[in-house]
Length: 438
Image (cartoon, rainbow, N blue to C red):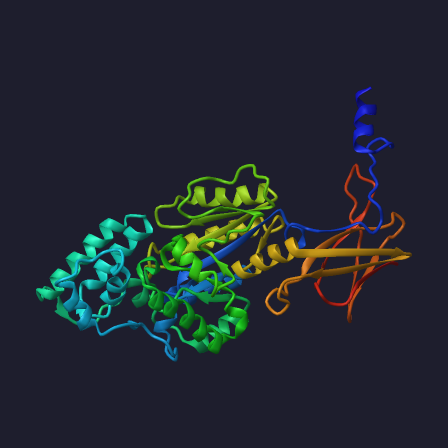
């Protein structure tokens, strides 16, 4: 009686055999119908990322995303500068007008460009406080800074932050070569600033001029992704940054995406959303078993995108991992590649958004014709989607044609299910895809 009830509920009246209508087509959640996605991302662009880590990535055939500090690269047009009034006018004003919420951002923006050694440290610490929602404490810190400036307590000189210094050593010519190998290069701003404490002109300068240098050096395809330094989630920053970069690793609010950012200690759980972005930062304090557990979680679910964030390599850069650790970790990911789609941050973003906005139309007249389209910007969103199409049981092989490209595939039959299907990639907004039994 239970079996009969189950068959009635499922609509399957032949024991254990449920037939999907030939031609039924769906877009798989991940490219090539993998169980999950992994993006290996790097912050700052320190030299050993390219000398040591990138050859390792290539040996495993893993594309990665490098968020680079553009202002220090030879040939960049835009470098760190203060946009605003003469700094001497600002210093003079601080003697009579205390720092407050109305002038905090201007004073903080000028702090790194006073020609002194030391104010940058105050600026970075104050920015951290603003990111943490402690604006009153940041105000006190900036007041203290300018009091010391007026009392000549800093030595003259030019100061750069450690991330900016560690990023020296590569060139745009080398970056173009690495990009041609399949890696994504994206903005980490001009100077690695604390965006949350910058005023509007200086924040926009960092956001837009870094993008402009990448556009001029690499082309429009590399202006898709960005990362505000320190993983800032400041809502004011995000309101500006999302207008410049379509994909931000900091935050990517979508109704169909559950975000677990680096600052969130949660693990992926149950959700009614289509996707989970699971960001984790690999540091010297992260045990290798924990790093591997992130990968296992992704491989054993069906909706999780693991976004790894790595900084230094072999002693250069923040929280530098050794090449031995990286090799062990990448090998672990490689062993699960049958379940994991390893792709750049930009490509995974494109795939998810295309899938969420795509339409599939099917006609079945002996052969099966599939039309795939989406409504997004076609120049920006152009990654192939993976389709799963059910076919007649008597098709032994299937010829799939789109435009001038043809491939012949063997049907897949899952034990206990009668309807065979094929998995294949197709380009949206192009010619129709035609499937014929051979």
